[in-house]
Length: 375
Image 1 (cartoon, rainbow, N blue to C red):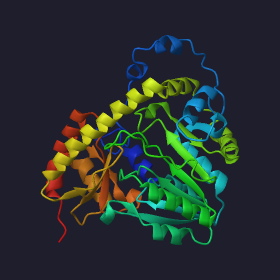
Image 2: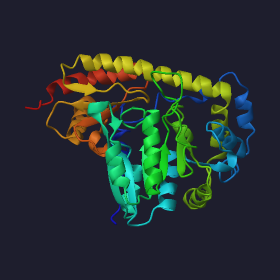
Image 3: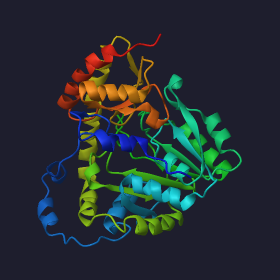
Image 4: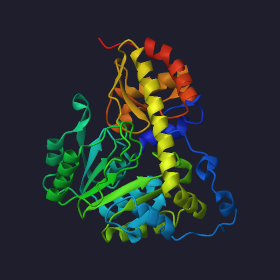
């Protein structure tokens, strides 16, 4: 099959360094090294680290901390990867063959969608319904998976909508995977970014033997520069991913492993998640007040988690056309909804520095006002 360009990442790579305001990204305001180290003696320890290879599958001390985030797994059930993106790529490469059916949640982050299409898979979607607050269409999922899907991919909390599946919906998704014999890939990089509650979103890991959980320090922790992600599964399949990891990257960085271990230590992790949830809540208040001032031109469901808002606009223009207008006239980069499989919407980051977001929204106001409206 022809190579499927990753349109969202292509868009960001082309423009994120040339705009005044990059609100197409999907993480909270980034944490500095000083923020991460806090009052600990971490700097002295960092200066003494020999910059040699770490354990290829991730330092055991880090894998132990990651395993502690889940029930029923240990450090040998964890593979540390270069971000969640490498974990997803290794999963598709290990599990999928040309012609296999792959079912993905839409709107969604289209990495698995694109990798599976490039590999020649039969890729089908099941929708999150905006008319029901982004609830999943479970009948559509069962229909798409019936007869033997190889892989079902979900993102919970959702990118781009910020919605969270209910426990009942999670059970139904697991049941659909088991009934079809599919592996369930649960991209859970936004666990810990909940806006409305202090409790973390439950994981799919442990709900079935054929679940692989994917996590990362990039989104909820504000540590995207570390490029540390992971795959978790209490099955032998984690070794299949490890074998791909040895081809793709050999190993992650040893310094990154050390800083990631520090970030996941109890007090530091609690501090980071509290700090980043405050970014999410502050950004939501700022953004929702701004939307109310746009005379009905914009609409969004309040996100339950993440630093993201997925926004419907009242205009006949395509989402890429709207994105280009925002970029050219306001210097603001957003992510067009077409890149998530949902035309007529755009994704915007609301969790960056509040003054930065406020200035970007002020620049967007006249551009939104001048958009041609739908008949």
